[in-house]
Image 1 (tube, rainbow, N blue to C red):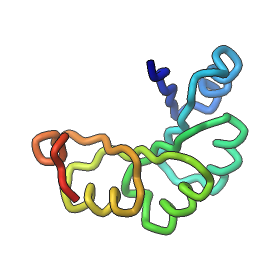
Image 2 (cartoon, rainbow, N blue to C red; image 1 turned 60 degrees about the vertical axis):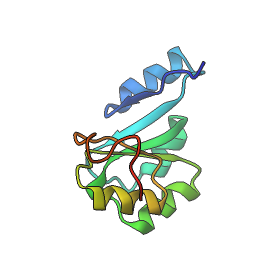
Image 3 (cartoon, rainbow, N blue to C red; image 1 turned 45 degrees about the horizontal axis):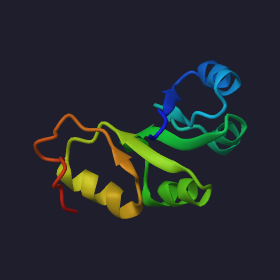
Image 4 (cartoon, one colour; image 1 turned 45 degrees about the vertical axis):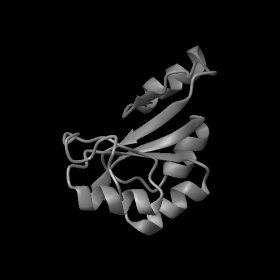
Length: 107
């Protein structure tokens, strides 16, 4: 069984999760770009970075992927934007438009 992924905007919550359950994967959730994302994700033992999709361009996606992290983006409701993000290498998309960006979405 796949373990749950713990994700939070609060660094203190991720630190507490790391101390209490170090075996569970963690993801840092950001709504504003932080230049210290690499240091934070390393220190917190994160496996992923979760971002507002508006914060990303192809270069940032490449930098995050090169750091060995998975990328989850929110909230993508335009199919064209979803396709672009997936082509760049984003791993997971949160959407309100499951009718347009659902299980059979082609990009």
